[in-house]
Amino acid sequence: MTSEIIPETGQFVLSNVRLHASLTPGLSVAFDADGFALADIAVVDGKISSITARGRSNSPAGALDLGGRIVVPCFVDCHSHIDKGHIWPRKPNPDGTFMGALNATGADRVARWSAEDVARRMDFSLRCAYAHGTRALRTHLDSVAPQEEISWPVFETVREKWRGRIELQAACLLGIEGVRDKKWFEGLAKRVAAANGVLGVVTYMLPDLEELLDRVFAQAIKHGLDLDFHADETDDTSAISLKKIAEAALWNGFEGNILVGHCCSLARQPDLDVLDTLDKVAKAGLAVVSLPMCNLYLQDRRGDKTTPRWRGVTLLHEMKARGIPVAVASDNTRDPFYAYGDLDMLEVYRMATRILHFDHPVGDWPQAVTSTPAKVMRLDGFGTLAAGGAADFVVFRGRSWTELLSRPESDRIVVRDGRAIERQLPDYAELDDLMVR
Ligand SMILES: [Zn+2]
Image (cartoon, rainbow, N blue to C red):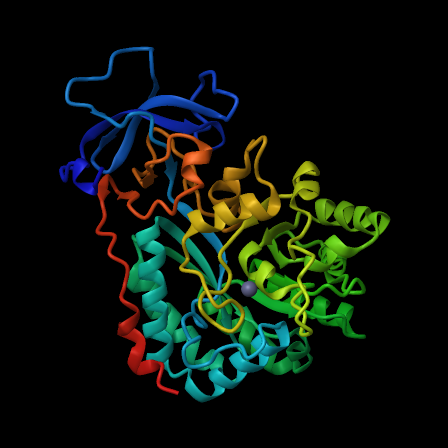
C-alpha cells in the first residue's frame, strides 16, 4: 500500500476502514470491544462528505477497499520545543540528568541561537511532524532575555510559512523567578499577546511562588491570554506547584485555558495529598499534559550506575477519572532534555501506551493525542473525523491495536485536504553546518 492509492483528484471513497469510537463522535454504530467499527469515508473537494458504517449499504463503485486498516484524524501535539530541537550533535547532555540538560541548553542558547539557526532547526522539526501526520503543534519558546527578541519574530515568520499545513502556537518559557523583574515581564506578556501567543513559565517552589503566580495570572487576564506551565518536573515530593497553580487559578477567577505539563512529583506523593491536589486541579479546570518519552529519559536517572525504578509520568488515569482533560505530547526532540524523538505522535502514543498503560481497555485514550489537545488549543474541528470536516487523516497498515502499535508504521499515508502528501523526512545532513562544535 503506497500513497498512490489515494487519487490526486481529492475525490474518492475509502471503504472498509477501521474507525475508533473516541475519534468519530458522529458515527452511531455498534463498536467492538476494542472500540473499532468498519466504515466507508467519502471525500469530496478536500472535505469528508460522509462517514457510513459498513453493512448499511454497498460501497459505491470505484471505492478503494482498505481491508480494515485503521484511519485516525491527524494528530495535535500540544507540548514541544522546536526552538531547542536537533542541537544534540553540537551540545549533548553530558550525564543525561535534568540539570545537565538545563545547563547544556542554556549555554547553547547564549552561544548559538541566532535567527537563522533557530529558523532552520524549526523548519526541520516541522517537516518531520508534518510527514508523520501532525496538523497542529504548540511549541514553547525560551524567552530569557535577549532570546525573546530573536525567537518570537522567527516564530511568527515560520507560523506564516506553515499556515495550512501545521497550525502553530507558541508559549513563552522562562523560570518563574524571571517574573520578579516586573517591568521586563510585563513587556514580555505584551510581546506574547502581540504574537497571539500563550503565556508560560516554569514553576519552582520559591518562597514567593504565590506572589509570582499572581503576577502571571494578572498579565494573562490583562491581555486575554491562555496559560501553559511546566510544573514539578522532578521526583522531589515537596514540589507541589501544580496545586499552587490550581489555587491561583481559583482565587484569581481565571477564565482562560490552562495547560500544565509534566507534574512528575505528584506520582511520588502520599495518596491524601494527591487527592487534595486533584480536587483542586479539577475544580480550577486545568488540563494536564504528560510527556512520557522525555520523563522516562530524565526522571530517576541515577549518577551511580544504578537502574531507574520509576517511569517518571504523572497520574493521568486518576486525572481522567475526575474529568480533568489529559493529553500526551512530544516535548523535546534531539536536544539535551531528550536525545531522541522526531515529533512523531504515533511514537508518542505507542510509548504512552506502554509507559502509562493506555490499554486493556484502550477506551478513549486516543483522544489524548487528538481531540483533547485540540480543545486545550481552541482548535475547532481538529482531532476528530466527521462529515463536513477537513479530509485530514492518517491511514495505517495496522488493523488492530496490536498491529498498529507493534511497528513504526513508517509507510503510513497522510492525507491532507483530501490529498496524500509527500512524506519524505528531511536528511540529518541538512543541519551539519549548524552542528560544528
Ligand atoms: Zn517541555
